[in-house]
Amino acid sequence: MVCLQSAGRAQALAQDAGWSGSSQVPKQQSVLGKEHSSTDSVRPALSPSQGRIANQNKPIANEKRPSGSQCLQFVPSANISRLELDPLEKMSRENQMLITAYRTRIARTKGIASKYQLSVSLQRRLSENMAIAKAKQEEFLRAKLEKREKLQQDALRKFGISATKEDDEKKQLYLQIQEYEQCQEWLRGWRHKLQETPEDTVFMHQLIKLIISTSGHPLAQMLQKYQYLIYDRLQPLVSHRLDECSHIRVPFHGLKPGSALTQSRAGRSCLHSDGGQDSVVPAVVDDVSNLYTNAELATGNKDDLANAIESARQDLEQAAATGENLAKQLTHGMNAEVDEEETFDENDVDETLKADDDLDLESVEGEALQRHAKNIINDVRLYIDRLHEMFLATYEQLNTPLGRDQVHSSLEQPFLERLWPYLLPLFRLINKSKETQLAKAMTAYMGAKPDDMFVGENLCLYGHESVPYSSAICELQRVVHLICPLSKLECVVHVIKIICHSVDEYYTGKASQSPTVGADDLVPVLAYVVVNTGLPQLISECHAIEEFIHEGYLMGEEGYCLISLQTALGYVASLSEKL
Image (cartoon, rainbow, N blue to C red):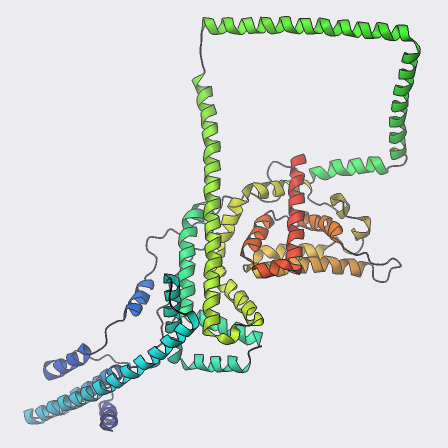
């Protein structure tokens, strides 16, 4: 009651003085300054967790921004909202209002005695507020300790006894999440709504997105921490090599676009021309018949045959003797040159050793890059799984098959969004040779038609569109503009569905029935689509999808579509060996 009266008087005095919350409080002197400093001395010190957050808010120092790409800035925001103030903080604010108001009244008052009485009155009221605040602070801390004990029991029930350091970190994070949510009324409202609608996937996605975008939430800070750990390992690997694969594009330098199509079409035109195929086969048959006829004639005249065999044997013996003599002369000449003067061209030796060293260095660098990439991929999976586990432990309503899928898909996008500009170049460096082969094949078969890629005649779809399967080509080109691996996989599935829909639409209203697009028919069509995209980095995109996508998606329709596309990419890349 006394505290409420003091606060009311403070507000009244502040109104008399024309005080506004936006003005700064000047430094106090004498009694006012001493009392103000005494209130500051009882404020609670910065907790270790707050200290860590403050250290995390420091920007990355001396970081070189890579050329050709936006540099990631993993600087967690410092706007951590605290809706609930402890009694000492409230008392400090009220005392500041009192001090400001009394200073104004003292300045207006005339006479030393009146000013002294106001100073004494202020000191007494500040002391009363201090005593009341200390009592409330003790009660506040006691209640807070009881809540923490309950939360610790809840964490022990969820995670059990901490056997490892990781288990202990999970428990501490769970406690931080619960304590944070107790101070955030909006989070309690969202949790209550989640309990009422546990099957609403849209609401699940909104809740996860909102939590991750709240900088003060422990789960958001955990995500930022993991992002920085991955970024800290990625940046030195690829920052200076971001443009290394930029030259791998279509048309590939040094190759004539469509050069392979000219030869293949010429061969097919020869086979399918009028009488072309009929003239070739009889010629071969005639040659074989002539061989048999000559053999029969030879066997009919035994004397001539014996003479021919003896003549051939003599020719062979003479050739062998001539070869032995030539070998002896060459050996004798080489030994004589070495005896006269043994000289070596040092430049040739140095160039040979240098070439071998370059090959060894490239091999070692490639192996090291493979190891680093494997470790980074494993860590990305591990960190996403940890975030997934903490979301399920914090919100039990999400621990359902539908909820688990929604959590995973909602976490993948924000986690990889800021890392993808560095992850994709890593995959492209790993698949550099494969992309080069694919770019050469795409250039050589640029402008290919379905039959050029050995698509079945019933699936060529000539006359249906200006470019057959143009919708599927445009959809596959969209893969490189997406970030989330799950979105990329859905795009690949959509490409297959567009192909099947195009076939059905082509045969709609025709006498012949629409053919079934099986695996053997689908791969050539996909090869045709891949060639016409002109994007050699599709190999790296599929590799990234395969590495980051959840195993459950690879067992069904999505996995079939991805394997079909990878098979088509491998087939098109193998065509470069014939160039």
